[in-house]
Length: 388
Image 1 (cartoon, rainbow, N blue to C red):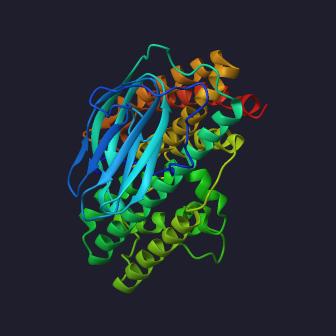
Image 2 (spheres, rainbow, N blue to C red):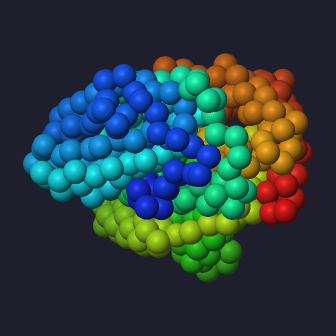
């Protein structure tokens, strides 16, 4: 079975995510420097962080690259997807600083030598500081924090998608169908997590993600689902693609994904785009994934389902500090319903992935559908709260 990918999101620049907000004061962390700064030493295969916990508020990291590759450093949320802060492009021998404002909770630190791959992670805990968490942060700062973090998340998902797509295309071209099938679902999760963003590039979406059922007369069929059908062919009436056609499809998939990656390098967002995008992702689940229509041949819809939920949850969590100020009850409701939906999805996990979708009973599908609808309704009201 394909493994469910948990990726390391990349990143906001230190200047883009300076959450050193006026109400926050530096803290002293165990194992850090005298001024409370936590030292990080990154090499080609290690990420040595001088402290594994800090009190809530402003936390500072001083990152030195003692390896031979350009590296990056992140502070990630508990899920390993949400980005709290990052510094990038740290050349060998250089130091960079990351300053972030963080509430109590569980996190990950991570170095990413070569700026490729999952990175080297470690647990990091933020305890409740003597003065508690920040209390009086301006709404504009919280909006900027949310949109900057989300832009960084999108950029990294696009990078992970490009890296995985190259591996997938290489296996497919070589005729290693077993490897290609293993890669198909987890690589596509990176696409599904940022699907509304990808769909905003109207010329790329049909090239990359068009289903056979949506083909118009005379339209050329390329992208993931064309290759999906060749990897999981119908039992009868299907002729396998010739090598030259495989090569052309694979090369086009990589080229189009490269274009998507390039377009996301300077992407920016507004708060309403995050909230509306989260709702669009839930709509994707309701109209495609929960019906089993997305992955007609592979039946890997639950990977897509999980990825859409991941993307919606990240957008919500980035907005949560602002939403909590404006409507704490709505924020609490959304957290609960995201948790409820995730518990249902977890019931269908198999190893690092999921069961094939057509093994679900009608009752199980309805259970998932009801949970999506229960989440979608309050999620649709977030935009009115965050644009006030």
